[in-house]
Each structure stands twice: as structure tokens, then as C-alpha cells.
Length: 85
Length: 454
Image (cartoon, rainbow over the protein chains, first blue to last red):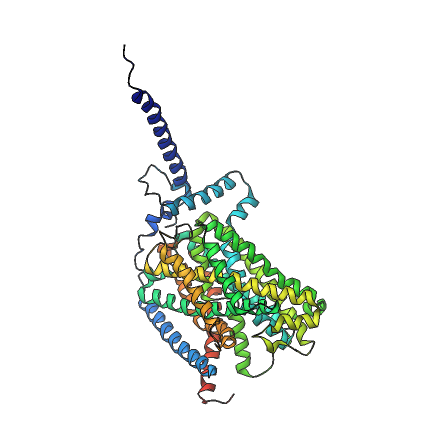
């Protein structure tokens, strides 16, 4: 009687080892996933948040802040450059 | 946004797990184990980091030189209680950053850009890049001053600074980066050692907590002192850094209390070490303030050596090298976070350089540009170093206002939004910083243009 091909005999344990490794890997990944919040994943944080609804008063205040900072910054940078000379 | 940790179930449509997620999850697993086993000290050890780094990172080269200059010019008095007061103000601002980062898992730059509009987002990033570049130049100057005391030149300062940036980035893990920088930051305590070595009058230090004597001099000098001391304590990069680092560390709403302890510990340590630099500087005043003019060389450490011995000079010089080095690492990181967040690409220490090329490039690039400046012959390094804190103070109100807006955004923060008391204190801090910065800016401009006399 002819013996079954050696390759089949050898493939069986290889396949089961690979399957066990795959399952172990999946289990590890599941365990890792359990430690993160859903909105903590890179996929979730890479989705932009929506624009905040700002009232008229808040918008005016932010514009005033913008003008204030640009004016003061120009003064400080002018003074700084003048001091360099 | 503010989900609880228990709500995460792998069965419910799990997103794909990236390398960044895996690395962060491993860190979180240790936090969960420590929390589950009620190991309080281990939990605190795992969760401290961003707060201490932001606060001790701000005890940087120019700040310590500013405190020592205050001490050398005015002695003990107003600035001894003023420095802890400023760090208490910094705590209010930094606690908000930590809370927003832990609840939203997003950095300051991206939230401002997406929630308040591109104009504010880019304005904040531009403001940060400008102040960071100027401050980084000042950090290299501080390292150079410290090394000059040991007869080492500017080239060594450049190589040391850049090598540290590259070394700390090499691990591809936030945890590794944070622990290395934390270890280095503890050497900020050398300023306290320097203060002890100058053998100060403990009674005089205790008596100065009544804010007297108030510094004299012209109105503009007083404004400059206030603006530069505020800029030595609260700056735009700290806001960007702590929020982004808290998110990168993987903090969640359950960690907010530990984040508060972390931030408070940072504020206490930074104020103690800052006052240490002031007391060490004050020793020069009682010896007629000699020697500090040699700032661009090795002024302070050398002067301390003559007044209080070699050990005090050594401690101050090594402290300056440490202060500059830690600040280079944290400020470069804040620039890299802001660049990644505003452009919308991967921005995490947990990502590999291949996946977060811009983040790593910005981190190294900004340090490289600053290093190049200090090698330019005849560059106005002294002027840059002294003005870095003032510029930060002038641009700070914008970052603070936007931070308060984010921390009050119930759509983002839910139940973790600011309480009324936090808003009252936060707005008072912004008003104080804004007034000091604007008053100095306007007064100096009017003097420069000869509209008013000095």
C-alpha cells in the first residue's frame, strides 16, 4: 500500500498552527480594542467635528479680539525691530 | 463625545485598528489594570505627564533667566509671591486644556480650526509657530549660556539640542517620549539647589510673601517686567501642548481628576523651582548685581560662582542646559502637533515616522531652524531671548479666549463643560494677561515713535 503524500501530512499541523495564531492575534486585537473608547480610535478622531453655532455677540467679540491682537502684535513687532537697530 | 470606557464593545462595528491605536491601547490597558486592582499610586504614575511637562517645560531657559534677572535687579519681594500666583493662573488655563483633550480626544489646533473656523485655526497656528520659533532660539541661547560656563561653544549647544530631539523621537511611542522628557525635567530642581547653595535669609524670603517691596522704576519698565514674567509662566505653546499630549496619551473623562493632580503638581514644582532661580539671582543683588551683564557669555552662572561658590554656579549652569533642552523637546512637540492638526494629517508620537511624516518633520524642522539662527554670526540673540516672553504674553489672550470658548462648548464637552466659577477665574486671568500685554505693547510703541517720552 502506498503511503499518503508527505506534503498533506505536513500541511495539516501547519494549517492548524496558522489558524491558532490567527485566532490568538484576533483575540489580542479584541483585547486591545476594549481598552479604547469608540471616539478615541484614529478613524473616529480623523472625522472633523461640525462648526460651532456662534451667536451674533460671540462673533462680534471674536472679531474685536482679532482686531485687538493684530494691532498690538504690529506695535510689539515694530518696537522689537526698532530695538534691533 | 464624552463616552464612557464601558461603552466600548468590540462587537459593535469595530473600526480598523491602526498602529497608533494599538500603541495607545497598550498604555490604556495598563491604566485599566491599575484601576481595576485599585493600585492608586501606580495609576497616578501612569497618568501623570502632560501637566508636569507643560509646567516644567515653561520653566525654560528664558523664564529662569527672567526670574533670576528679577531677583538680581529687585531682590526678594514682589516676585516671590507673584511667581506662585502666576502658576496658579497657569493651572486654571492648563486644567481646561487637559479636560478638553481628555473629553474630546482631539488637539487644540484641530478643534479651533473645525469648531470655530479656518481663520482662527490658522491664526492660532501662525501665532504659535512665530512665538515657538522665537522661544526655541531663546532655548538654544540658554543651553549656550550654560555650556559656555563649562567652556563649550555654540556648536555643542546646537548638536546637543538636535540630538535630543532626534533621540526622543526615535521610539515611535508617546509613552517613551513622555518618560524620557519627564526624567530630564526633574533636573529643573537644580534651580532650587542653586537657591539653597546661595544661603538665602529664610526670614526675608518668608516676609516677602506680602508682595513688598514693589519694584520701582519707570511705568514702561514695570510693564516690561510684568509682561515678561507672565510670558515666563503661561504661553500659547503650553495650551497646544497639554491638550494634544493629553489626547495622544489616551486620557479619557475618567482620568480628569488624575490630570488635575498632574497639572497641580507641575504648577507647584514649577513655582518652587522658579522662585529658586529668583532667590539665586537675588544673591547677585546683595553683592551689587555684578556680572549679570555678561548674559550672552556665561553671565549668571559665572557671577553666582564668584558670589556663592562653584557648586551654585555649576547647579545654575546645568539647570539652564536642562531648562533649554526640555523646552526644546516640548515646544518642538507642540509645533508638530499644531502642524499635523491644522493640515489634517497623522499627528501622534504613537505613529511611525512613515505614517506621520509631517509630524516628525515639523518636530525636527522647527528645532533645526532655531538652531541655525544661533549659529548666525552677530544675530541679536540677547534681544530675541528677552523679547520671547513679551511676544508670548501679547499673543496669549487669543489662545486663552479660544480655550475658554472650547471648554464651554456643551456640544463638545457635555457635562464636562466649564463651571461658572471656572469661567469667572478664567476670564479674570485673560483680562489681566491681556491688559499687561496690551499696556506694554502700546506704551513701548508710543515711546518708540516718540509720541510720549520714556
